[in-house]
Length: 88
Image 1 (cartoon, rainbow, N blue to C red):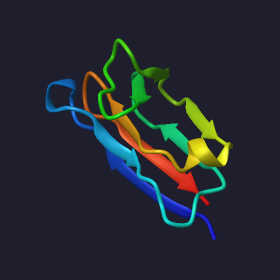
Image 2: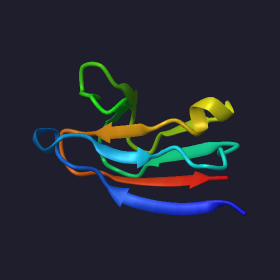
Image 3: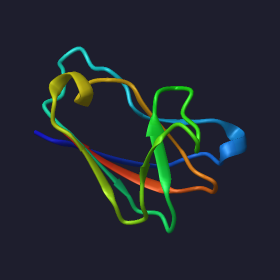
Image 4: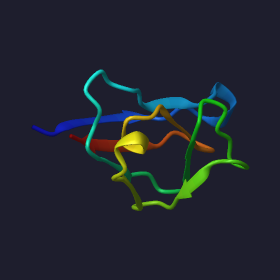
């Protein structure tokens, strides 16, 4: 069964928001959708707008390698964003 969740990222000045955390049973995949009106940046806990992987508004990021799908992933954006996550 796939899990569905959503959250709103924190503004840049507040630090990165957790998107995914490792699980005891590794995920097979993770689909991350940027439902915001501007770019969101993804990466490690120190992600910033200068070192993150950018996903444009209405864009998505698909992690299909089990090691990547089960890694810790954080997001940051210049203003609050709604991010949807679907994983299995």
